[in-house]
Length: 621
Image 1: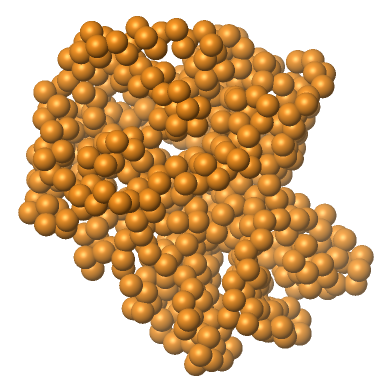
Image 2: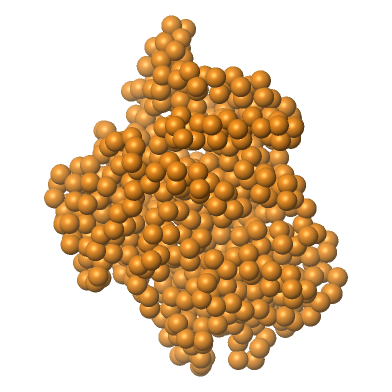
């Protein structure tokens, strides 16, 4: 796991070495163990290395082939690199290192751009083909590793993080309107757009060929769409998922440094611990985080401790307080480069810093919910015909008045607003949005902003199936997972040079899961049925029956506690008001509703707060 950067000057002028070094310094937290650059006329490559496999100097990057024609910078892990290396050795290739980086390089030399289809892993890499004067840049299938790029008539720049691209003073710090509405609707940017005009994000499963001053983007992998499914029975699917997942975990244990697991006590992370224990990882280090406020709703430490004790792990806990958040907010903004609305980034950030003292690699349960049906909203959408009769009851004038008057009731209010929407896609995105289209219109002074559902509408037409549940799970896998949850994990862990690996995101498991009938994922009021069944082989049934908790963060308590004055001072500061984005009569209205405890609007205020903090760090600068 590392950080990569690259520059290609179209006017053929030499790359500024100081600029390249400055770009690397901006992301050296991703790779604190080593760094290097490659310069060739108008081309520059830079790399910050986190040493995980082959810790020797033979793994130094940028790396070149024996003829010094191909040059690579690579971020990630290729889990099947040993098998590919064996095939290449049989073809006569000689290797100088034991790294997966060198395997990528010679795979490209042998198979060209089709090499990317052979890789099982998480990656973002760039190969400069000096002979053909081109860049080949690829991102992994599910989007675990980020890749950003900027292109104009003078230059092409790419990097693992936006802050590196911004080191080039020719890149203007301007806000992209599509990125703006994406953020305030969903809490994060959505590929290919970012909040910066001109800076794009390469979508998962895509590659770039940059040649002759032109960018061509192609898709090399996509979700497998299976709608006509032959039911082979629960036992068959459980065994198959278990076999693939065990192999996936085993592949992700390859490391020359210590590794552990983020343990919440839920099904997904508990399965990771169980399978690592089965593979005799010793000492098996587990890490959990909790809060000193909010009680059981915001604290799963007791559940995590049960699992840790059962498997006799070397368990570590950390408790967070409101004062920790005040000291951390601007750090989070810095590492994310864009405002990020998921407050769970705070505990993951702290847990990553804590875990790095003990390990360099952690396994996580990311992806299980989207692939095996773990969200409560899936229950509602799957049983829509049963719950839709509630719509007239929840949305009549008297009920609306009651819901408006009563404090909190966050889930009931979300249910009421969702059931009132007849259009399927608009109803579903309402579950995961913070500001509706109407609310965006009230929030912004500019009434001509782009459609926040642009990408969702495009992907809906691509991934629509004959079953609504499958359709929305596909959408979450393509958008919410990479642009939300995986970005959160990547930026928070890599802030401390900690590598995270997600066994549920092995593309072979994702493809097989598509063939599983929905009733083996969700049935009645129970989610992730198959994973619960598998976990029963490792843990007592009482733990397996645990209801989904979710990574709940007490933002409501914080914003009414020690952060109350801070929130008010930032949001209603004259600098914030004078920017000209927001209608402050509307912001004052929602703040008053929140302050009077009639509406759970902490998430919306959290978005505005983070946007302003980001603007001060990245745009004002």
